[in-house]
Structures are given as C-alpha cells and as structure tokens.
Length: 185
Image (tube, rainbow, N blue to C red; front, side, top):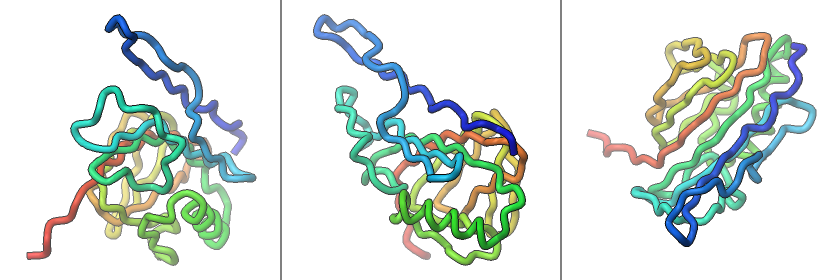
C-alpha cells in the first residue's frame, strides 16, 4: 500500500444565534480523534446524542465519549479509516485488532480468536455503515460482502467484522443507535 493517510474528516457544526439566525459555529477536524500508533487506522467521533428525540441545543461533548457504544437511548456518529490488511499475517492482524478494541472499544463484545475475522464483534445497536471512500468487506458468521463507496449496510445487532482487503485506505461513516434485543421466544 502506498496511500498516505487520509486527511482528517471535516466536521461542520451549525448553531442558532441570539437573534434566531443560523450560522456555522465550527468548521474543522473533530476534537475526538484516535490514530493507532504506527498505522493509518483512524477513528474519529464526530457527534453524539443522549436521547431520542435529541436536544437541538445540546452542547458538544463528543470529547467525553468513550467506547464503541452510543449513550443509552442515544446515538454516536463515527468515521473510521481502515488500512488495507495487505500481507500481514493472521497473528499480526489479530494483535492490531486486539489493540484497537482494548484502546477504543472495551465495551464491545469482541469475539477474539474468531475464525471468520479478527475484528468480529457484537453490539446492541442498529448501525448505518456508509462507505465514503474505497471498499471494505463486511464479514458475517455465515457469509460476507464487499461494500464500495456509496454502499450502505444496516447492521442490526449481528456479529460482524470489517476487513479492508483492497490496496487502498477505506473510509466508513458509522451511525450507531442504541437498541435493545427482544426477549427470546
């Protein structure tokens, strides 16, 4: 892979002034970004809500967000840059994924040691995964599919993983929505 890291996702935040007029309150990178050392893996939290419906005037507290899960009854918008897995060994991939889950997503149910993908995990969320750039493989327990720029996957609390098997960086926007499982029948 010869791709340079992608530029930080641009976050444009609107607001309403004292006269009731809209304006651009912020324009630039998110204050909540993590780059895995020695890698082009980047996870950027862009915004979160604490309830549905959300408060329009809610302050920006994305810097305080920890973990993969959104707040209870809330949402989180995250952009992740996935580097190609290239010719890394399964052991190297497992070590990298384990480091990411330990550093960023300890609240996810990481299926460490999964034969399907080192990144297999489950969350009690409904997620909209929107491919912005490149391509990514969505890995399920039984099958998988390649998603390309413009494709959208709706993940509904399923075990899943992500693998970039291409030669270029992939950028995915994720909207995670808190969800509950139905009681077993």
